[in-house]
Length: 199
Ligand code: GAR
Image (tube, rainbow, N blue to C red):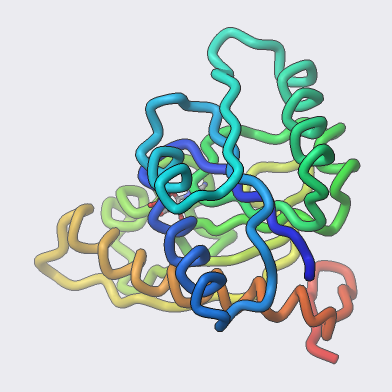
């Protein structure tokens, strides 16, 4: 069974959705390690409650490359094959990306390449788009970049607030992240340029 490492910085609802799919057997893999750069992250507490191996190194004030080397070390110690970023609010160093080349996924709450970076739902509302959504993509050295695996569209309603829009996007995030993980673990894809193609 392939072993996932989940990296999170906050609430951890994407982690929990993946965990429920793993625990129920809908997703055929193991969660080998849950890591947070924030000791107070609710997602980390939840991972401990669920009995997963967990680790935390506070990132504040640490050099990115040195910090990432420690995280890589922990992931290797736990035999991690694939890394899933689930609300991990840190930019990965080139060293990290090359250690897990082609085996790092991220979920982002917009239809990339629109609205990368922070507060994507707020960006979508203020820009006035009528449709936004979420994206699961491979991670490369650039921010919210990398070939796209799956996207789901979510309409923006006239009376939306950031909270309401975020909540509807989140439902889709929880669905497509596990779907994308199942797909890559089966290995039925090839990457041509930026396109991820089912095989
Ligand atoms: C999610 O909406 C995720 O898409 C977003 O952070 C939230 C984490 O929620 N990630 C990014 O914005 C990455 N650029 P969660 O902690 O409940 O999974």
